[in-house]
Image (cartoon, rainbow, N blue to C red):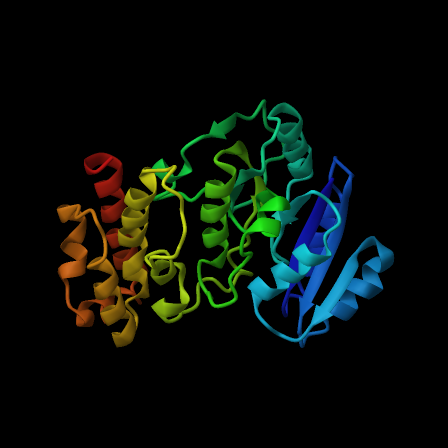
Length: 308
């Protein structure tokens, strides 16, 4: 039923926790594929010694997380691909609810659940399961799907580009956007069935060049979201404005970001106030968590209450 794909790079202290969370699932029709992307901390050897033939280990030279996920996809034998990062954890019922969706929503190709960064619930009652028919209209300030709580039917990757190796930030969001456009609908379980370990994640490090991110990619003419969803371009502008300021930690990103803002089709004038500030402000603000949060909350307020 499910091919569980776990990319591994220097996460030996966490990977057994991730694998154990799969082996402890209440739904047991799955295979586990760990792709060791050139780890130097013995993670691949640890997986082999602890799990043997319970896990299919594929090893490659370090090429990045996108290449690792793509290698897992190429080696998957089941129709549905479930993604889990090596430092995250599934609730024991994650695959149960993914299977529930597949059984109750015929033809569904994209599914997932909410997540928590403080822990997983021991008990929960009848979680809400939503059919999403216009993802772009609600994904601007919450993209819903994550790299450890999303399942995609394999035919997307058989027909479309997989995880883009030229992107070092937002490579997963890029897939979720294009996959929704491909499948035209998705399902979502509104209970946290994945624990996202922020302390183990490297996502809090400084940001890469904007040319290597989804923000630049999604403004390219050839990006390829179909005309089926008029909400796409509105989403794109809101998503850019909500998130771009965090990348203004270098002069080059500040300049590139200003150019990206010039490509948007919707102005949302009040949301532009933070972007009128000079680069010197951002050099100071982005190392001050409270000030950074204040900017983020202001932008969220704009799009939740003013530009709904």
